[in-house]
Amino acid sequence: MSNRTGRRLPSIRKLMDFSLMDFSSNCLLLFPLLLILGIGQSLSAQTLGVAAAQPSTATPSPPLNGVPVSPAFPPNAALPSRGEPTLSLDETLRQLSVSTGSTAVQSSGNGDTTNRAELRWDPFFGTGVLSVAGHQAAFDTGGEPGLTILDSRQIFSLPSPYLEDGALRFPETFVAALKRAFDNSIEDDQTRLRIAAIIVDPGHGGKDTGALRTHTVNGRTLNVVEKEVNLNAAKMLYARLQAAYPDKRILLTRNSDTFPSLEDRGVLANSVPLKDNEAIVYISIHANSSFDKKSRGYEVYYLSPNLRRNVIDRDRYSDNIEIVPILNDMMEEEYTTESTMIAQSIEKRIGEAMGGSLPSRGVKAENFAVVRNARMPAVLVELAFVSNEKDALILTDDALLRKLTDAIYKGITDYVGTFEGTGGFTVNP
Image (cartoon, helix red, strand yellow):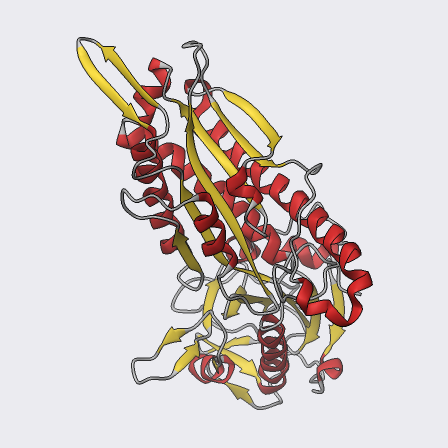
């Protein structure tokens, strides 16, 4: 999904059961296994325009910073070449750091924006991870040529870094190859599909109170007002998303006791400017109510696929008006698929967080106007029932409500991570 209004032409995408390891936290320990399995696409140094150094024999280097290093190769194996020019760690990090207009930047304090390279080193295995702008290259120091794995997808055969007098030395060909690989990956990021904005919609507000109930619990009167619950939960969710995604636009349809109409909420969501490679999602927060006081639990809704609506800008295709219905149908299908994924992810996470304290009523399709008006993947979360005493205690307890909204946050981040990790669920040819 990425077409809303004026976005790229939609396409039927192959959804993948995508499960990449979290390389940033696991690759140091898993690197020896990856070397055995040979996962990925093998690329030589020559593929990147650099020549690999010839192997030679040498004695193992002293420990790094006084920490014993377990050799990752037999005593008589060919060791990394000492014949070609090398760079120190600081020189390597400077070479790999890039100034860029990408979203994953750090400020240097003087007006420049730089993706600074960093190193994580495991002295036991003699392996390390160089990272730049969210991309990771895992390498070992135990063979010539050694294997370097980029983003758990590509394997390069490159001259190995090695230890000399307790310090890592990086062959120039190794650094040049990684520099080009990182630069290519960062350039790809500029066109790779990403979630650029998340709309959080606290339902009701102002003159529209939503559901109202009063409970007496242990002699204490408990007044539950849905519009207040919705706004409280939405602000909690907003804060979590803002902290997690400083590079994304996190927007509230209201941040106080106001009454934006359903049409106003749709206009706000649909007017967010997006680039061709950017997407947006819509999360509406509500609380449920029933005449049956025993009814309780949470549920997550997505727009029924049987509802037909216009989701693309028809003026954009005025020269080819005959293809508009086809493109619109394709885009509707994508929105429905992705809305279902968001709903399932949120439902799962709430179940994990709340356990038996708040039963799940499942993921359902419905034609709610607030999600119908948003031309994007959209879901509506019914947190719990204001009409049920047990649920009302959750909705009016800040700690429990935060636990509930944290689960919604995790469901959203699960979806965002999968969407961005797969380039919008597409498989590049």
